[in-house]
Image (cartoon, rainbow, N blue to C red; front, side, top):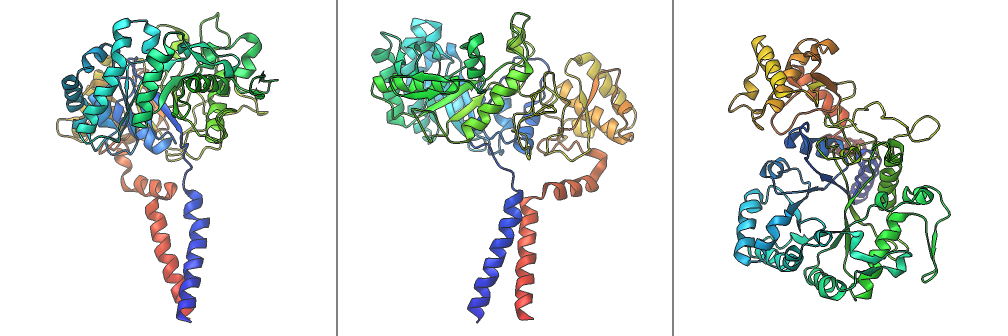
Length: 502
């Protein structure tokens, strides 16, 4: 009888937890990462970015364009794997093992194991540079870097290099995909052999944005279209992304390496452009990236690679205001204050991409919506993206002169790092706003402040400030954390046991 009661109680507990704790666990976009670039003068501190990605989005991996130690420190203890890029100019030197070992010792080991490294990628689209020295040095550098990682007990870190689709001489239809003549056996077969031996992926940057024509716009955006038929394989393609990946696959197959995995290092669509780029708009960016996320996570794969979920890094995390053209400045999913340019379904607890009334994508920037990781109705005051350092320093001086506690941004304080004016101003301005009733006018600061629904707190730096324990409790209840589920388990077990005793 006791054994029967135990089994029944275990079953009831399993049933309850299946309908409660498991049901409220946020789903993750298991294959969607993001490129985190920083060609801008208005971006938030890396610590805030890492915290935002971890707590308020389903993005679970990032790709960096260098090995900036501040960025690598920011992702420590976040469980977000990081891809680091070796600059093009550093590649020739790394072809020698001592230099590769020194690079690993200086750039990777200081952050290991607290920061998780997924890939080290050498350069960006090296073949497109036509630089003979870089091209000749690429594979030797990949080999020595991998040897240096293995020697440092970092064999789990893989080495690759991103390629543009310019590596193909033909790509339409996809079955005709072929590497450029002279490069196929001499360059790519050898690189692919390295990937096969090290079980690392071949990384490509497919951009339908750069390949569409007016008549193929819907095809590029994953919208309904007649498709493109490939007579050699009998496959019909309904989107350009799949066609581009299958063209790469066909090229790999022609040199005997179709078994090597493919990772998408970059892909995206700008939400704005120059006057002669009407297709660079918010609706198209939402359509492309939103449909991309759904398509990749469906696990359907491509016609030639069915039932595969590709690892994809969207370009890019933020709009970057120092890029040379309007379109290049507007590839970002988020603005510098963390409000979404548009929502492709990567904010936690969101059901899908942003839509306008009637189910159509918006034609202008949507009103920023609070990520579900934020406490509903809460706001924080942060500097505007265009606020000057001089203005922000004046804000710090004013706030600290009013009696607001500024010790957290002083040396040794939890918010002292990163030690720069913008970060310190963000804390001080928010502290003033919270201490003065959270009225909108308390975040004006001569038009240099802006309210955000994204909690800027990071690590030990707590922006909840004067709200204290009440907000912390509210966050715990709103989030229904794993700890809450543990408490529920204990209560349910006790209740079931009591029930059977009675």
